[in-house]
Image (cartoon, rainbow, N blue to C red):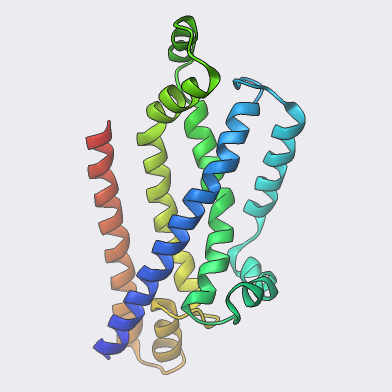
Amino acid sequence: MWDTILTASLQTLNMVFWSTLISVILGFIPAIIMTLTAPDGLRPNKLVYETLSFIVNVFRSFPFIILLVILIPFTRFLVGKAIGTKAAIVPLTVSAIPYIARVFETSLRETDPGVIEAARSFGASDWQILFRVYIKESVPRMLNGIILLVISLIGYSAMAGTVGGGGIGDVAIRYGYQGYKLSYLVICSVILIIFVQLVQMLGNWLFKKLS
């Protein structure tokens, strides 16, 4: 039993790590564009902002389990199969990108306008304001968003396991639910709780350091 659970735990960590990393990188791009083109941004553009914001909202509205099914052809195209840990990373990442993009945008736009105006008065360019004011001031808030994303993805990864994604969710369903072994359900639940608590503790520590 413990070998099975250890393997599943590593699969869950693998899914969460790669989907977090890829979604943070890809989600940062639309977040920057929306921040720049927002009505109060450095380069307002209503058409670009509204279009991108609509796309983000559409993808955020999909329940993960539905998105998981809808993306099966796309997942198969990218990784050659629709089940397994590697395949589960695709829907996890797609579901995470709009979420983290919105979180990053909100974090960036919460930057104190007074600091931005001060930078302008010193002759800073838009790009200097973006990187040295917006991003620098928003790092702790964005970190909080990433921590919340990781916690959400831990839950989503368990859900992906119910449809052949591997990981803790897969073990809980196959051995605990379908195999009528309560011990598997209890242990898998405890492991997921421990994962979440460790991530939150790490996030709180980093937030204090960066703040």
